[in-house]
Image (cartoon, rainbow, N blue to C red):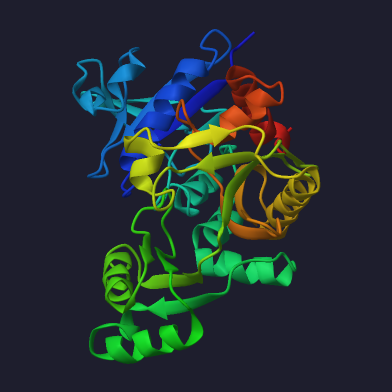
Length: 356
């Protein structure tokens, strides 16, 4: 019996390129290579597509994978039925692909762009479709959906790049009239806390806006919520299920990029250190947001649970969450009895479910 062919996409032209490499290393090491025909395709920061020819996935995080002698240029064809095109000298080898797993975080991988290519190609894809990916990637659109779904969230304000420059002072005045410090300043379309700052005063607010606009034309300024950072993994298509709730103690000012991937200051608590009724509300809201955005396959939904009152406040949703060895999504399901390799099998099954 022919093994299903799986294309694992990683890297990408994104500020989260390095995070993707770490996630892909873990996915490829936990994927059952005896069960699937695996095609690991890396996308460099410059946009080159490479079929990785090595079996040592520890070369991914440091970038050495790009220079492996077994590598070949490759591309996914948007023409249905052609699948993966592998370039060898003057020829092209076509490999049909049964399912793709875009282990791609952020721009061009999680925002609907890659999902659109796979849709054109007729290749089932792990994770949400084009529309849900685009909505979830833009934090301001996600906020509108959560508002409509009546899920409590922090107060927020959209700022655009045109509101900076000569308009900076009036923009700062407007934000200070609405929010008390501290506030969070976030690019609307990045993940992994890329470009996110916590502003404590007018000077750091201006600096945060200038940082965020380097990554996106749209900037989200958000009320500070004093509470525990809670994460829930959601899995499924028509009948999604939520994992137990986990908690992140960043050990830093907030759970920024360094705390997530570069330092060992953060600590994960599974289950989260919150009352059972708050945990139940978190899980219910996670599924509600997941459905409202239109997700399928998987997503991680993040919340705050306030100190003292244990009030649940929605933060954001991530449609291709981290899959590194320390990432919460696989750890949450592992804690519930679904080990990492079984989770990958289930994700691939869900991707192909609508095509059967």
